[in-house]
Image 1 (cartoon, one colour):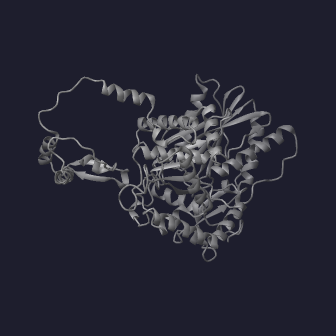
Image 2 (image 1 turned 180 degrees about the horizontal axis):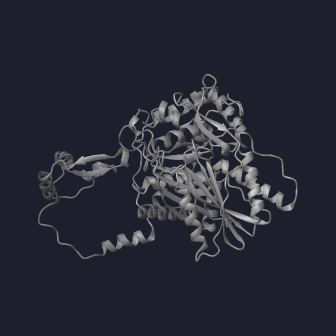
Image 3 (image 1 turned 60 degrees about the vertical axis):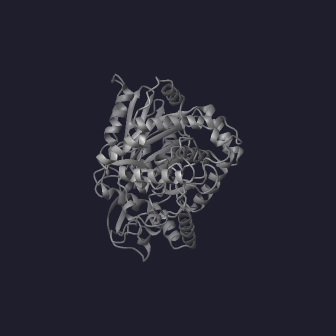
Length: 560
């Protein structure tokens, strides 16, 4: 392995490689930058804050890297990213001439709005990690006793866990400087430690076991057949976000519910999202094509879950190691709330035990199919419970996330960071796929579901829980109270057959997640309906009577 200062540079982690590949699909996209606005409540000394920042950057090698092509290292080293032909290396260099703008916005009519406009304008600028610094910082003053510390970092350099190491170090250094105490000893480990640990993992039996686990899991889900066209989705250049908070009382109820089943807040949030996605109809068909894998509400739901992907040796290394892996929750609508939590806990434990297996290896080697409902970018969740409480000397600080980096599909972010005991819940998505009003509707329903779960007992049946908001229920009832419409003289099937004759190949039905949807034309849907009608006639149906039939929630429901 190349050593710092040797000129050979260092290889990329698997997570960095994934980010590198994603950016090559759209080099000028600004979406690869993550950002936080740290609200400091007090009149901090801006000069001391700059000194603390510069000292922390000097200690954080991941912020001082330059990316470029370099010689291949030890045999097998490049195998961890699967892209030997690229030979991309990272070089840790001196970085002491970076600017730190100090922007006083107290004279603006709305200083907060002006600050956010400035930060979003900067965040909209793309960063090429080959040629530019991977970070940009600024200090914005919005009141006599209120500052915003803006930190934007390319995701190839650091993940969210790394930020939870870097920020407390900045606050620790500022506190020492303000008090006149000696600077505390360095707490951040060098980047090479993470690379050495990952190289050891890729040569280990543990990786072999992890790969076997995921291969077995995906095969059991019926999603192991390769679908190359589903690889390497281009992230959205921008995203639409809906932000809200789960009240402290409801958040406390959700935590208590999780404790009752001996699990945690993260598992409760995953279980709630699985139930929500299932109710939307985004359930995974069973391997036999029936849409069920046993029991009432037995469809499975697959979510992308963001994990730290770290071993014990990298707990104090600020760098990019985060991983995204699929979590399958079986039967998310069957039984009781407690049973859902137990099923989710069991699956989450398996995922966490094998969380270091790189997502990109899963895509390439296991041939992960994007048709898994909710899987591989349709629905994802990231529960952040590792954010520490920080203060800059005597001044408390609060973190406000601006961006988590690339967005594909629908992402749900849960932050256990507000200082009042509430939970911040963000929904964010590609606006070209999910319009803002749709994202807002999902957000409202999910918050309502969380409030319902917070007051439900573990014995509450899931089929009694509603995901519709009060306003949506009232709207449905209002439709039912509308004026009576005259029954058309022409039967529905006759009218539809006329449309079939007009344009037999026109799309009549789209059912399922966008990348795995069943699409039927008018002629095909009419043929299915006719086959079902003749089947019912052969079995004694018809004659003007009434009857009931159980039909799966798929395209066959429309034919019926």
